[in-house]
Length: 359
Ligand SMILES: Cc1ncc(C[n+]2csc(CCOP(=O)(O)OP(=O)(O)O)c2C)c(N)n1
Ligand SMILES: [Mg+2]
Image (cartoon, rainbow, N blue to C red; front, side, top):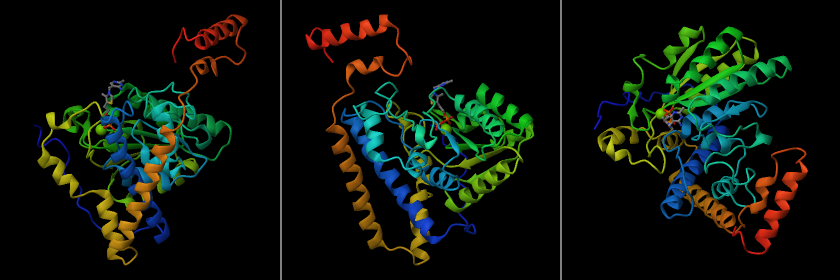
């Protein structure tokens, strides 16, 4: 057991807020929806109803407040754990379940791993599974945006472990030299699967790594929506003003398993998790809102019931849809399929119709 693995939890202190109360309440709703969604998605995988899932439990404040500080035209390059970001961008639980099931409504036609969703119309690029690849992609897209004179930023979302990847180095190096409008949003959740933060790098903080590239690096309490919102908004303003990229290290904790294929009890103690559970970002924001008189326990119970209903209804609707048509794997590959491929498709459809090939 690696008791001393994770960094000490940051001490909560009141950050002056740039968020209007309506925004705080809306952020809180998305965070609660994300938590509810995660709990149900984990349960569905355990019941054999979806194949794989990577929950974002504990990282809701960092994700939702970050996305809140961005503009709709900004380009997002996520990892597999950015549920809160996807929800802020307008993604519905039903669209997510459609992707997990690879059903007929799945925009990716069941070709991606479950939980590796993407939404082109929301500038939400399909999640990267190889660690770090999205870092260089975000930098390249930022360079393209500058050439096109688009006043947008690109955001690479990645974890602590990704800061040891080749692509992190290549991406930050390029971004520093070309001063690209990129925000590197690192969620340091203490673990890269079973490898604790201390075993990944001797760097004192992950934000420190920015200095090597001539890029500003900042540590932010990722459980504090106000601090995250302010840091991202400021980084964005600098980026669109032509002042270059920023590396933000949001310190959070992965309260759940790495994914449904992981059992964290094998490498970390309950005691460590309990310390961070007390810093739960949802409980923290709820407490703040109640203390300030903007929220009540009764409001909370009502909202929880509402989001649970929303997620349950999404599952019901997604599971009622048929699977992706088998022959759809011929679609979207070549703009003009050659006659040989068309012939193969007709043959495949004939075999399906005759029952020789089972869907
Ligand atoms: C290039 C590469 N190496 C190894 C893996 C296996 N792998 C999947 S997730 C992961 C850990 C990533 O940790 P971190 O960057 O901290 O992100 P987190 O999962 O904690 O959000 C690893 C090593 C991979 N997907 N890609
Ligand atoms: Mg991590």
